[in-house]
Structures are given as C-alpha cells and as structure tokens.
Amino acid sequence: MKAPSFARHAHPAVDVHPELPIAGPRRYPHWLNRDRVRLYAAGVLLAELLFIGIYVIRVALSHHGALEPLSQDFSPIWSAAWLAAHGHGADAWHFPALFAVQKLAVPTMTLADGTLPWLYPPTMLMLVLPLGWLPYTLALVLWLGITYALFAATIRATVQRDAAWLCALAFPGAFLTVIVGQTSLFTALLAGIGLLVLNRRPVCAGICFGLLTMKPQLAVLFPLALLCAGQWRALAAWAATIAGSAALATLAFGVGPWVSFAHVIGNVYAIVGTGHAKLARMPTVFALATMAGWPALVARGLQLLSAAAAVFAVVYAWRGACSYALRAATLVCACLLVSPYLYDYDLTWYGIVIAWYARYAWTHGWRRFDREWLMLMWPMPLAGLAVVPHLSFQFMPLVTLASLALLVSRIAQERHDVPSIPDARDDSTETGFAHPVRPHHRPAYGMRRAGRPTFGTDR
Image 1 (cartoon, one colour):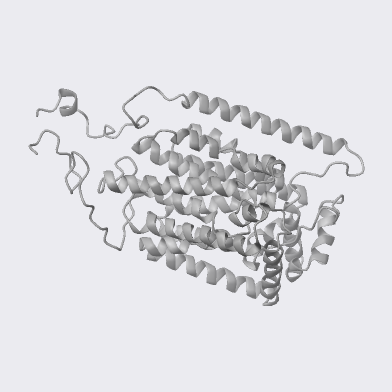
Image 2 (spheres, helix red, strand yellow):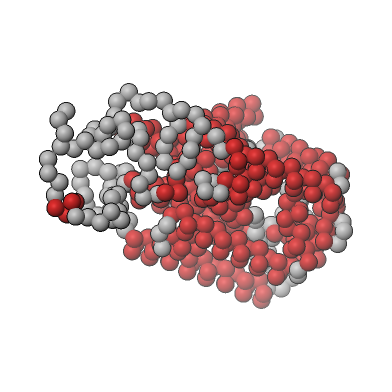
C-alpha cells in the first residue's frame, strides 16, 4: 500500500504521536477542554485568595483571640527550629519546652484544642534549622511561599502544559496545606522532583527520596520501586542520604533525640490504634473501619490489606514494562495507602498523581471518564475535610483505592494492547530494567513483536 503524499514528505521532526482524543469510536471534542480547565482553576484560585484575605483581616481586627490564626501547624516546626538554633535542639521532643516557644509565636494558643507536638525525626530538624533564625511570620511566609511555588513548578514540569501552572496554584490540596501550615507541599515536592529526574539523574533522585524519610510513613515504598526497577545508583544515593543525614543529626543533637522521637511516635500510633485521633481527618482504611464501628482487630487487618495492595501495585508497575508516567503515578498513589497515620493535608500528593496521569493520557490518549475522574480527584483533599465530619463516614481511602485500581488497569491494558512501543513523545520516560520482561501471548493488532507497524503487508 502506497503511503499518502503528506506522510512521504513530512519532516522527521514532526510529532508522529499527536494529542489523542478520548478512546472509542466517536471523536467529538470533550466538554472539559483547555479553556474550561483554566476557567474553573482561575475561579477556585480567586475564591481561595479571597478566603485567605478575609480571614487574615478578621484575625487582625478580632480581640482576645476570638479567631485562631491560619497555619497554626507551622508553630511546632518553627519552635523546634528556634530551639535548635539556640542550642536546645534536644528539647524539641519535650512538649513543655516546645509549647513555651509556641506561645511566643502564637500568643493566643492554648491546650484546649489539643497539642501540636514535634513528630519528625532529628534529620528533619537539620533541614528546618535556618527557620529558627527568622521571626515567626517571616519564616511562615517564606516556608509556605517557596514550597508552594516549587510545587507548582514541579507540576508544570511534569504535565508539560501551560495550563498546569494555574491548576497547581489553585489545587485545593495545596491550599489546605497553606491554611493548616503543614509540610505536605515540601514532601510532595521531594517526591515530584525525584520522579522527574530519576532516569536522567538517578543520584539526585535518590537524594530526594532519602530526604523524604522525614515522613517515613510516606517514603517506605520508594526503595521497593527502585529495587524492582534495578535503579542501583538511585538506591545507593537513597541509602547514603539516610546514613549521612542521620550521622549529621546525631553529631549535632546527640543520641537522645532519637530515643525521644521513637517514644513520641510510639505514643502517637498507640493513640491512633485506640481510635482517639481525629479520624475524620485521616484518609486511611483504618480510620474508615474505626468510624464505621468495626472492631479494632478488623480495622488493623483491613489496613494491612490496604498496605499489601499498595505493595502489589508498586511491584506490578515497576517490575514489568509500561510507561514511566504510569509507574510514577502508581507509586505516589500507593504511598497513601500504607500507613494508618495519615492526614488530609497529605493528600497534596494527589496533585502528583493527577499530573503524571494527565501527562500519560495526553501522550497515549484519554479513555472514557478519565478526565472526569481527575476532575473528581482534584478537589478531594478539601472536600474530605468539609464533608467527612458531617457524614461520619471516611470515604477518602476509597477514592485512593479506586485511583490505584484505575492506574493498575491502565498498565494491564497497555501491556496487553501495545507490549513494546516506547513513549515516542516522552523521552524522559526511558527506564532501563535489569529484569527481563515476559513476552506477551500475542502482539497488538497491526504490530509485530518488535513494535514496527505492519499496515499494508500481507497477513
């Protein structure tokens, strides 16, 4: 069969894999087009900025602490950094000393609404120590502003679309992190950068994943993924980062903080295990079962099954051949299903999942309801905070499980339909695997085993 003239004379630099429409026989434009995405994101961003501006004005005009300041969860971060900067880093894990400094930062803070302890390992104290040399307000603005901007830049670099800037800045998960004052933007930033540079700069990726152990409950699956992919340089950098940062923290603060940290974490998991934590804000299977009134043994068993499903998904994605974007999205999504200790602000990681899946779909084509699902995930971190307490039903882990199932099914479909086509438009997804890939039982229609088109040949 003779090739058409436009194909014979096309320039070799022309994109041979244009943006694909939604899967299926119809080729109508999708309702969630680029203009609507920008419009919705701009509207949400405007509403978020108005909320912050109005709330800050009300706090400034209120008397006797009638309104709580925003970002109060930043107070233990700054207080621990202040103690370390003034030579008392070991006291960060002793709540009376920490609370005394918190009162300097937020004078209206009381113990009536609960405590805000320092729950991070000594290695994290090394990272935030420079904040202790700054005034509280300046440190808060710099911490949230810089991590927010870098998070948005990471999303833009992942999706590789201009509209991603606006979507990242308006992302409700990032907004929730800002109004709470947590570290989730920083952890999502480390995970996002590490996944972006893994194939080209594996040592840098390993350092990012090693620093991510500041929140061990979110980092446990990264070495498993590196092991499955045969990324030995990244794995070595990960181990070296952990060992080096632990040695520096021990030299700076001594061995005592490690003992105090282990004791504090044991108490936290004991509180969570007895169901006395804020379960409405914990998007875990354990919280779902506990809020439903099921026995503690059943809740722990379901959490173990959730962790096992996450491990299986990571091994399945990173051992076999598939697009790197799907591997990255699967790993990030699976990390949110391992630990029973997780809060709604940690769902900022949804942004990384959405970004990698959008990148994949723009390259390989959208399936039916893909865009609707991503649009549903986008506001979920904030929707969970607003809806779960009124429903008394923790539905957020079901959203994460369903998202993981969608990713695994997409990987299975890719391996079944197109067993050996590389990402033609995505040269950053080239991952070498040390393990041989199992041949599939049949090639895709119109393709040989080598992945070359056979259109026009005799079959």
